[in-house]
Image (cartoon, rainbow, N blue to C red; front, side, top):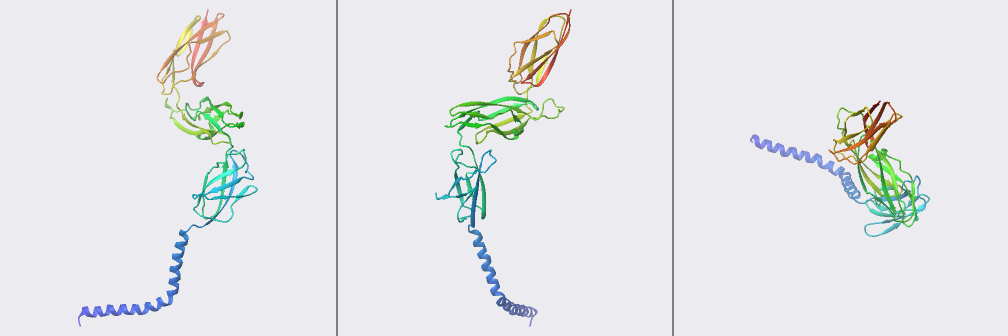
Length: 344
């Protein structure tokens, strides 16, 4: 017999011996293996099916620190089926269970004070218990103008702005401005007002850009801040963008005024920045007995533009007098010019 034949016979014999040992084990553990396979398949099928889900809802008034009691909540599924909740004190419950993954649109009746459109307006159920909080705005019908507001504002500077609100509803509306987003800490001065049905009002407010430490660059970094001014108790809002650090760059010539008699001088104001001047101001501070009257002042200077104004300086009696002119865009970051009059 050759070596190959011996090897083949040995291999066949070894496999037969392995089968003889394996078969009793398979027969012994076959029930356990079958049960395990059935369990795995059953779990896979079960986990792929929608699981039962329950739902309870609380309703809150927008900008109110309280839960709305007695609200009626209706769910509507994709097939148009509706389900009414059961209100118990401050919570609305729904009988029975729903399949998880079901999406419902939601409507709420909480009386004439509130809108019927909550936030969120739809709910998708997860397996198990679902507890959802809805927020309801007031049933106001308000329009605000403008709907968007973009402001260039130097660091640490303040601008006075306004928006107009029209009441299109049948009842009076009490509201104010609620700042949200980046501008939340930048807005101040808004008051609460009551707007009669069919009436309108203007809300004035101040917008202040954050102050930053002075740097070495003459052109500060511009940072975009975004947010909104929302009418309280509603979702109606003005979208606000503030380019903080964007400001005119004023240059004056001459730098100072020195006189020995009453005289009029012209001052050139150049705007060397990329932001237009919209509210050029000249504030005057003088010693007693000195008069400095500003003339021919215009309020707007385009980017990279210039203007001229006159200052008429006089004193009623001989003496040495000093004064200052502070030139700015809306009072922000003023440039100073010194006046000196020595009258004999």
